Length: 164
Image (cartoon, rainbow, N blue to C red; front, side, top):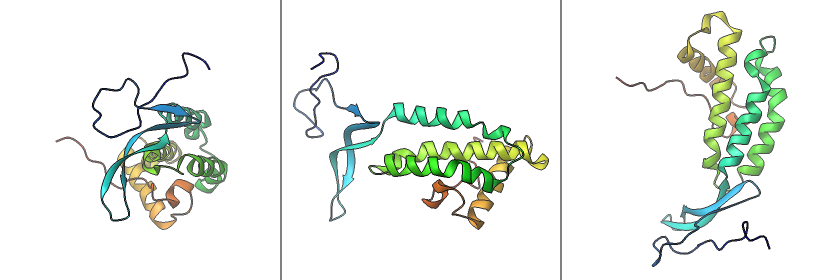
């Protein structure tokens, strides 16, 4: 066993008697740590569960960035969907198997990239981020099965909260 990679991780109760050194570990793109769970009666408790790791989130966003969707102005939404849906489906199936809510932030990043694509593609949306997001939101309402992440409910927001 490798001495730097092998360690004992505390998986017990939420309030231990002594302070543990390690309370989480990464394995196969998942971070295992204590998280909130719900039992059959609907009561919440703390359990040791896996979810997508921060390293995997960064890797997914980097992969999305390499697609350079904003430079594909000649494409339409169906063309973009056919290009990225198989990859999105794989990520959702693999990382969404456990604690799917941790994956939602990464999928919202995809919506931001699509809004950026729309701002570059259509003159009326240039330099109008809020309008582009609203336009994407309307499209997601009309065609919720166009992109894989829209199917599970991660759609662009039709509004943005700003500071007053």
